[in-house]
Amino acid sequence: LSGPSAHVAAPNVAKQAGAWTSVSAQGAPLRCLLFFGGYDHTDFASVAIPWLQQTTGSQISLIVGAGTPEEAVISARQSWEARGISVLHHVEDMPKAFLDCDALITAGGTALLDALLLGIPTAAVATRDRQHATIAALAARGAVLDLGLGRQALQDRLPKVATAFQPT
Image (cartoon, rainbow, N blue to C red):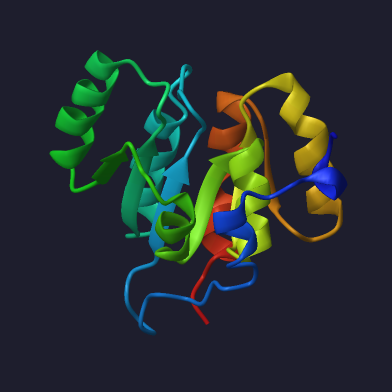
């Protein structure tokens, strides 16, 4: 199995397909969730979070993936929580965490496909070369906002997030 047309969702995701509804009241800050995979080894969060805070005024939560070394989790908590970012780790129920946001910025792996199945407005950055084709194919169909491949592309394309996810 490969690609978005062959995605087999976990049962806890499949049973909630299309369940997303906006969680913020009109006029309230956007609730934005970031998740860059099992281990954000190139620190995409440090590109996205400051920009989102300065530009959008979003309420931001960051899921630190299960593959993240414990010292990096501690460092992320100390760094981001001091700036008002909610840091989540060992998330048992990813669909619940995803459904508790207005928009998701994620990598191009399984979490992207799960978020789209749930109906969550999503922007994705390819953290690895192999993810770029999936993101591009989904973006061509209007399913996701393509933030490109790598940290520089993410930095360059973050302004698209501000306009794409404005509350209506």
